[in-house]
Image (tube, rainbow, N blue to C red; front, side):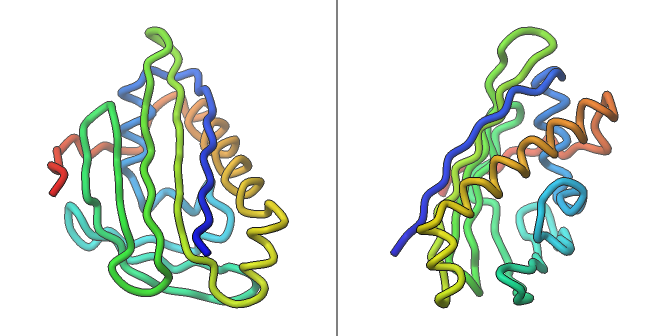
Length: 152
């Protein structure tokens, strides 16, 4: 059973600012519920420590595509099976729509029941609202990686 979630949020920052912040994976615990830590291994690999349904999980992910100010896509390379993409859409000079789509395989009864009950949708929506508050309150990004990763 694959679960898919797609959510969007409009943020009051330029597209470059929103994109730059999203490339700062180690800042995700500030706005993503359940993400304990992310370690950037190199330009295209990250190591995640998350807490889901009361259980700690660790996994690695690879960035499979990255186009500055447009999109970042990734997939897990071990651990729970998941993949995702975040896209950035310029609404005007000072506003950006951030859209996240995630696909994953819930593991165990707690995750499967949570998926059916819509817990995943609510979590992603809440994470995007926290991203909005995080970036708008700061008024700027904490860093940036503007490299490009071509789709395989």
